[in-house]
Length: 254
Ligand code: SF4
Ligand code: F3S
Ligand code: FES
Image: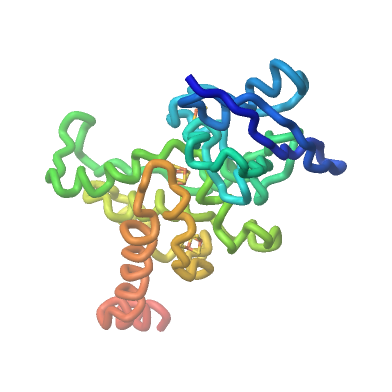
């Protein structure tokens, strides 16, 4: 087994401010960045705050930024860096710091609550729902989301623009709307909720200019932009320019 000392810069601080602190830490074969953060806690910085849970890329807790890129600490192998590289670990930039590497991600829970849930089809009881396999598979991809919020952190619409947060749900939650909108059994429209219109008017779909940064950082490799956001945008446009919808709206306005 080979061992070496890696040079880390870790952000330490709280809402009042902070700075990068330097540490030389032992690294062993097969370790991930979270192992190194734990070794730091055990040997040099007992009070270093970091959020984690599963250490298996499944709980979405250990999100942070490594050399400026949003990543899971537990899924980033030390072997992707050179032994001489300086490795910088900072908290997610789009969310307020609580302490050290821990951020307050409650923005995301607030956005989740703003999206109306699946509306069951009238007259069908649970157990009677039937969907084609194609429809099941389409939304299955989105259900792999572990809510790490790395996509929310990296999206330029909010990353450095606190002022956009009120109007923009972010890629994770626009994907949720897309999933519900393409669900063949969702009866929201019958209940008076047009998910396409609400995506555009209430959840800021128009802010997304399909830069795909969200897709690039997703640890579950969900094609957020290609399979959720672009199809949702296309359906919004279809709806807007559908002559029957246009005529219906014109008649209703009279
Ligand atoms: Fe994380 Fe991907 Fe879910 Fe975004 S879509 S919260 S990056 S798992
Ligand atoms: Fe943001 Fe993803 Fe759109 S990064 S701009 S939501 S494609
Ligand atoms: Fe659960 Fe990293 S600790 S995803």
